[in-house]
Image (cartoon, rainbow over all chains, first blue to last red; front, side):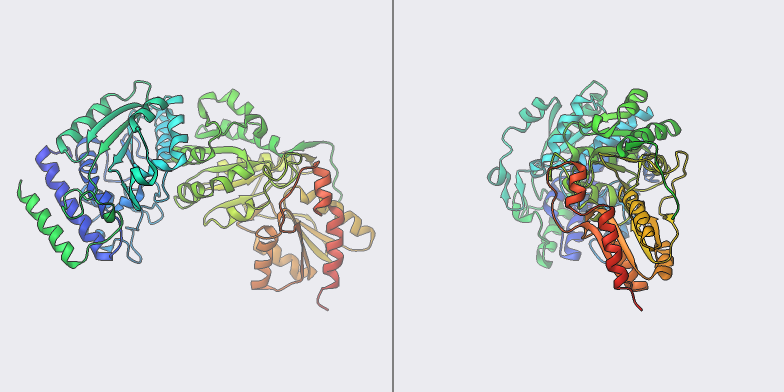
Length: 281
Length: 319
């Protein structure tokens, strides 16, 4: 399934169009963070991870991904659909009655590709650690990835997990933090400052890496570098700088687009820009 | 009244420790996690035998629940261990989202439930845990009555697919069930057949119910005694069959009167066969420091309280 950089960019543009359409379709959801993390999730599923769209919950012999900041479900669902986990037509049912594509990811509706419910923040790192420990016990030499929002790091459980993973040498784990500096009520620095994230994770004993999460070349390179650094006694965390709403200019960088759906006019403007972007390739 | 005697007394948590080792021997998928209470949970023997299958999380219960959920994704059968208070209320959201809603095969094993933890006081006791856990869709809730039944339950839940809350206590209580029993999840255990009143008890209140039955027998009252070790799913058939015969019920549990076994029984009766019921339980209160015996006495969780409740409910029985 490995794609070239231009192909990855093309998928990312399709995913971004899905995101704005999905959120517009139900007038609900979180477009900002979804657009910001599109390049990362596209690279993960179409270039970096070894995974099987013929989904099995235990994922033996596969790399696994856990979305901890479940509110950016539109990007997760779109990437899974494009990767062949389920039919893309289901994306139109997002946040609607009787859908498998719930507001936040769920295993309850048996949506292929989802291994844990997330939405109540702060739990995904612990789950990822558990899955990574099971892989070690099973002699399964694959990697577990997680994604967290920077605002999510305000949850205490994250730091319980951050302490556990280096202590128990969970070195088949790559955690990723979407550092977009925004949360619902405003810029993260104003709501509850995270100060020096790199220093924090380093102090907890993690191997800390950084990347530009909206530069596909950098995303692919850093993720592959990180995979190459697994198995060396330390868990890895990647601090990924992104722009909230990246790809849609009027959403870019504003916390106001954390959880607001575009109206008809805004949808048209967003799609026009994303079509133009797609045209670049 | 069927005669029950005991030759030994042990804590139910030791039954959990013994059962965990056996479950580990029977199935190498069984793993265990503990939040800095190995001694209290009696997990030492499991760790000695299966060190690679044990994870110390430190004092971080939320993380422990999440890791347990993650381990199930790799087809492990995780048993978490800490006090009942920290196994439920402290981590309710983690259990709700990552375990129950995600339908993960985690066994939440909780010691020091109820108020007979004793001297530590209400901060370390919990009287709300059955209610919290039974309200979670898909969660099985088990509260065994003695050492042998706790051991059997621990072994049984390892073989059962789905999230389970297994509740046990700290104090030593009489061992009166068989050592080689088979534990059937969801199946009530008929302790004594009778015709005048149904005493439906759970946990170590079952022994108090037996003592109450003996006192009542002296007074000419023939009590049917049922041990409900599985509060969810509830053996409704056994309860309805019993009240159809006796016409009145006393429920007995070491839990808040609100949300526990009594409420579950009342719901079954209200929707099938409305029947007079009295509740032996803590009357919507927190506990306090004291010896287990003192607390049982003060909060009315003993044979005398059951006898008094039986007399009250018989007086309310329909003509």
